[in-house]
Structure formats: structure tokens, C-alpha cells
Length: 337
Figure 1 (tube, rainbow, N blue to C red):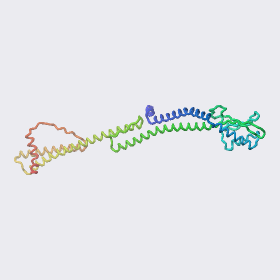
Figure 2 (cartoon, rainbow, N blue to C red; figure 1 turned 30 degrees about the horizontal axis):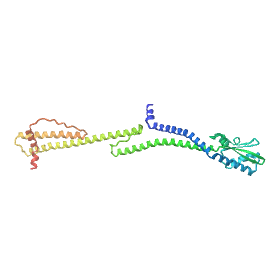
Figure 3 (cartoon, one colour; figure 1 turned 90 degrees about the vertical axis):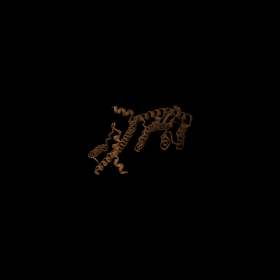
Figure 4 (cartoon, rainbow, N blue to C red; figure 1 turned 60 degrees about the vertical axis):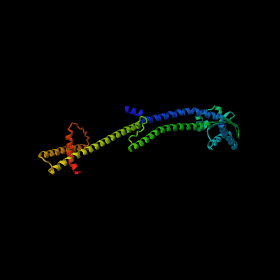
């Protein structure tokens, strides 16, 4: 439960849910704001323009002409309504015909579509703004045509539909904007990974937010820092190993050279007394032990160890040391003339 709450508060799922809720809230708020504004604007337009009278007069004029040309009687008034409804004429109005104070036709009662239009019309104006009367001359006498021109209904429906889709599109754009930000950040992480793959371990991946992608960015930075530290340690260890091997190799050649010199002296019988013979043999043994010790050190280095050489200093007589070193180098001095 705690993990789910953490993901909901700081994870990508929570950000997506918050983006959707924000989109819904903004869309609903905008729709509720646009409704009264558009209603007021449309009402002003209807009052200050001839939209409704022009549309209603067109219907009344057509019906007057039809009645006059067809010569129908008041008992055939249904033919007039059928002609208006079925001949491709624009709807959006209610027709009522009265003769001698009696209603002989009412489309609100006889036509379901007109009744639906009448019941759903916005009627932002007073009733008188929709009603216009026209005289009709039937073959059997005069009548009065009442036309309720609810043509604003279609305009209002179109405006409301536009507002709905506008708010819906705005909500979708908000969600897409949130997703687009995360996609851009993912592309940035992809580019950062390629930079790290190229060996630029000093590069810092930008950290944005607290979600899983931000945690990935922090992990990449920690990984690059750890890898850089390990590489520096490996480089340092290799440098130390190289220096140690170089030093041991140099130290190994010294006893081998001295040993070779003593062995040549013994092989050529260039000693004067048995004591000097034994001295040369002891020095050869000492050189062999030094070689064995140094070779053991090289073996430990080759096996991955890094032994630290901690030499112990002790006081020795300088003349004896000089004579010892000189005697060890005597053979090399003689070979080089």
C-alpha cells in the first residue's frame, strides 16, 4: 500500500492521473465559463440583427405563395404543411393556422420533429421575438398564419457543439502536453546514455522531477561516478604494478649479475685462498636467495597481489659497503674494459 501511494504521489502513474484530472477540471471550467458568455453574445446578435425575422419571413412568404398558387382550401391546410416539410425547406419553426378564431392546424401537435425543436430550443429571447403573423388566402376564405421561428436553436446547438469539442480538445492537449514532456525527457536520457557509452564519465545526466525517470537519471549519475572511481583505481593499481615490476626487474638483474661474476671467478680459479673460494660461494648463495625472493614477489604481482615493499633501514660501515658493491660490479667493469 505504501509503495502504491508513493508511486501515485511521485511516480509516472500519479503524474498521468493528475494530468487527466487537470484536463477534466480545465475543460469543465472553460465550458461553464463559455456557456453564459456565448448565450449573452448570441442574444445580443439576435436582438441587433435581422436573423430571426429574415428567416421567419422567408418561411411565411413561401407558404403564402404556395397557398396562392395551389388554390387549396382551409380544409386542405395539411398539404401546405407537407409541402413545407417534404420539399427540402429548412425546418426550425412551428406553424399554426387560425381561421375565424379556430386553430385548424398546429405543427407542434402534428409533427414530432417540430415539437422536439420547440421543446429543446434555447429561447434566449422573449416569446414575441419568435412569433410573426402572415395572412393566408385560401379558396374558401382568409386565415392567419402564425410562424414561431426557432431558427436560433440550430445556431445555439452549433455553438454548444463547438464549445464542447473545443474544451475536449483542450483537455486532450493538456494530457498530450504532459506525455510529451516525459517523452522529451526520455529522449534526453537516451542521449545522456549514449554520451556515457562514449566514455565521458564526467557528464551529469539532468535530473527533472521525482518520478521513475528522475530516479533513473540519478542512478545513471551514481553509476558513472562509481565506474569512474573504479577505473581510476584500476589505473592507479596498474601504474603501481608497473612501477613495482620495473623496480623488481631492476633489482633482479643486480644479484644475477653479481652471481654471474662470482661464478666466472670460480670457474676461472681466480681466487687465491680456500677462504676466498668459500667467500665467493657464500655470495653466490646470497645472490640466489635474493633472486628467489624477488621472483616470489613477481609471482605474487602476477597473481593479482600488490605487495608493499617496506624497506628497513640499518646502519652499515660505508667502506665495507663500497667494497662489496665494487666487488659485485668488478666483473662488469672488466668486461667493459
